[in-house]
Amino acid sequence: MRGLRAGALVLLFAASAGARGAKPKPDKPEQVAPPVADLDTAEKQYGDLDYEEANRTADRVLQQRGLSHDQLVRGYRILALTAAILDHPLDARDAFTRLLTYNPDFVVDPNLGPKVTTPFVEARGFWRGQTGKPGIEVLATAHTGEAPTLRVTTRDPTHVVEGMLVGYRWGANSAYTSRSTTVGEGVILEVPTPPPGAARLDYYVQAFDHRDNVVFEVGNPAAPRSVTVEAPPPLPPPPPAPEKRSILASPVFWGVVVGVLAAGGAGAYFLTRPRDPTSASLGGGIACGGAPCP
Image 1 (tube, one colour):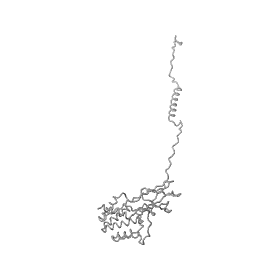
Image 2 (cartoon, rainbow, N blue to C red; image 1 turned 90 degrees about the vertical axis):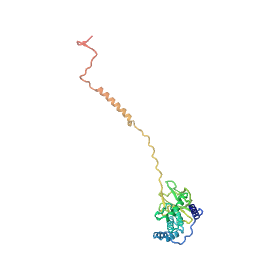
Image 3 (tube, rainbow, N blue to C red; image 1 turned 180 degrees about the vertical axis):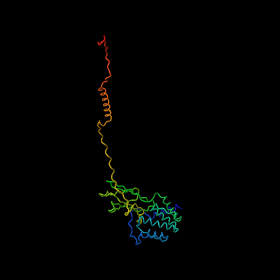
Image 4 (spheres, rainbow, N blue to C red; image 1 turned 30 degrees about the horizontal axis):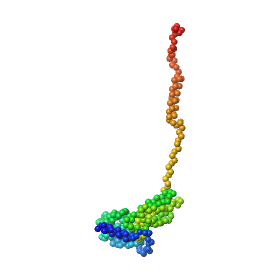
C-alpha cells in the first residue's frame, strides 16, 4: 500500500513540474492579498487554535505565483500541521512531502501526537526512498588574477525545478548581474574578474518551479552569500647563499693553535728554567793529588 502511495506522489510531482526547460515567463499576477500578510494571519490563526481558518488561509497563499522560498516553507508548514490536526491524513502527508522538498531538515514536534507524526513519518519515508536530498550546493572560489567560479549542483529527485537563476555583484554598493543556468551536477559558472579595489563577491543561486516559486536557494538578493578574493600564496624564500667561513672560525684550527702554544710554552719553560745551585755535575775523570790519575 505504501508503495502505491509513493508511486502516486512521484506522479503528483511529475505532473506539477511538467517538462524541464527554461524558466517560463510569469503570467500577470492575480489581485490577491500579499502573501506575507496572509501568512502572518495564518500563523496567528494557528496559534489561536483556529485550525480550519489557518488551513484555508495557508492554502490561499500557496495558490499564488512567485512565492519566495521562505513563503513556501511557512505556507506548507501551516497547511500540513492543520490538515493533520483536522484529521485529513492524506492531505497532511502530501503537504508534509512538499514541505520536506523545500526544507529537508524540518522535524515535527513529537508532542503533537500520532495524528501529526504519522503522516509526517510517511512523508519522510517517501524521501528516504529517493536518490538524494533535494536542494542546491554551491562551491565558490576566487583567487587574485583569476576569474572567480561558482560550481553549482542541483539535486532534484522529484523534478520540480523548471529554471535556475544565478546573481552576483562585486561589493554591496553595486547592482547584481543575473543569468540563467542549467540544472545538473557541478555546473561551472565563470564570473568576470573584479574591478580594481573590489575584494568581495556576493552571489545567490535560486531554483524555480513552473509557478515561479523559489523551491531551492542558496542566498537571495536580500541576503546573499559572499566569498573574498584570496591573495596568491607567498613565494618561498630563496635558499641561503653558501657561507664562506674563515679559517679563524674553524674549531680545528683553534685546537691546533692551542696545542702548538701549549707545547711551545712547555719547551720554553724547560729551556729558561734556572739551574739548581745545590746540584753538581759529575765529570768523567778521576784526580790524583790534584793531577789527573794515569
